[in-house]
Image (cartoon, rainbow, N blue to C red):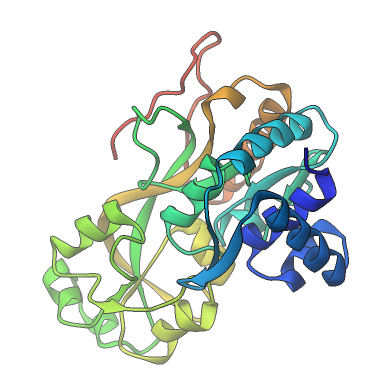
Length: 304
């Protein structure tokens, strides 16, 4: 058996990326993070390496995963706070005043792969994801509970030549560089935009940095993308172009299937739906997804 303190420290490093961040979120000193995570690694005969900017375990983690399952049950029983990760726009708009028993991460992880890994390995208990890149409906472990849908539109800097056009087409937009991320970061979004000649100016970042995303659009002729919530949070001087992308975004909560119906999860979902109802009054483009019918074991996932 491993203590809750030691496993919390190891999980915190993998989740939050550094001893400094783990210390801030978990409320323990950096020295404690270092000592406790080292004990955990030694106990399971593992080591950690930086890969792609993130801490990855090297070695057979079978017994560690068994312990993580046990410790997640303890968190669900209230022995430690449950861990919530979010997108950079849902953290400030939906997660203020979270219900007791929930702890929010830094909400700056770019791409779906790392977030899904954290939920799948039971390091994180729930992730507020952005549509359309969600777990497959037939994923045996994970499921997504849809909360909202909203359009995605193009953004640009003030004074951009596109703003001078009376009507804008996708072809007009494709004449300029458009923001993208490393291949596979958001597979469904990437595929939809590449089909129309976009997503061609890749930004290499594992953790969200406004100056490298929206900031580039403000400073250059690059075309970006936004939603009512992302523009509300990080829009700055960005201008919204009168043209929608061929995809919808929105919010969904990704969890392990064995967490469905748990009272602490239901309390979180109620909180998030309440926040979205308030935001929808200010942003009518936001469509709220109805809660699944009582007795439905898996929330429905409609294709985007």
